[in-house]
Amino acid sequence: MRCALALLTLSLFAGQALAASPDTSGAEKLGWKLTLQSWTTHGTVEKSIDYARQLGLHYIEIYPNQDLGAGLKGKWGPGMTDEEINKMLEVAKAADVKIIDTGVIGISGNESEARKLFDWAKKVGITIIVSEPVEKDMPMVDRLAGEYGIRVAIHDHPKAARYWDPEHTYDVIKDLKNVGFCADLGHWKRSGLEPVVVLEKYGDRVFSSHFKDLVPNADKKGWHDVPWGTGESRAADMLRVLKEKGFRGPIAIEYETTWDVPTLQKCVDFFNEQANKLAQQSTAP
Image 1 (cartoon, one colour):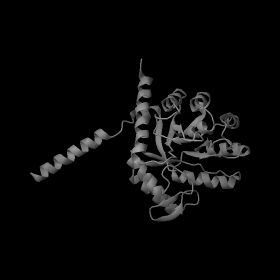
Image 2 (cartoon, helix red, strand yellow):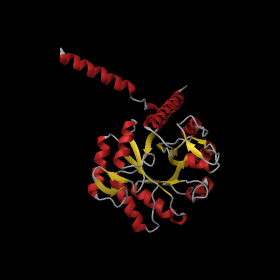
Image 3 (spheres, one colour):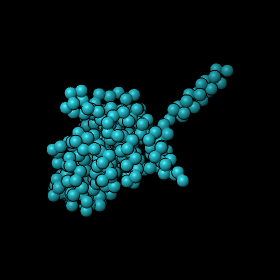
Image 4 (cartoon, one colour):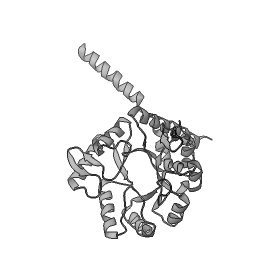
């Protein structure tokens, strides 16, 4: 009798867990991969991976020089040993999380040094390197990206950073096949740009995104993150334009304000809700 009750309890629990699983079918159809940018959580790579797991995410972007954790003393980047790489991949696999991109990480203008970065990225399984290379190095970066099969996405920091102005970024990359935008939508907003307008113009060259929804600070001198869909960045429209532009790739939660898991979960839920709506519109007669 006790065994039967235990089995019934487990069955009910499993059913509840399955019912609570997010519906990611829309994102999958659109070719979108919701990731966690580990800059959100800081701490160790191991802990960031666990946060991704808690949020039901299967992809993560790791920032350079983040402490590895998992009993290792090293930091994330091309200086990792094979032992450290294998351990981090084991940690990610155990959480059902894939490390698919990394950044913002520098790419040397020296080709032999740049190859060390690409060699490491290939070992780790990186598909996109998020970076801000010097303009004159872009032809070399594009060539290596094509050779290694790892795309490079140019990240924007706020005005007056090297690539804050999307028009300048586009002029630099427009003739390059393997280099595109990493659209940091929050930094465009902080630079006085409207992210929806920028995406409408350059969305077809976006390889990845650090997605944010912002509201002004109380002193009106800056902006801060809020759960997606509750700010002034027009989050639903940003996703709509990405879909219209045929974007396929990672969209990262990068929450730079005080956060907790329930707050980040609101971003996950908003994303899945919007992705499902947009995917259904794709199939509507």
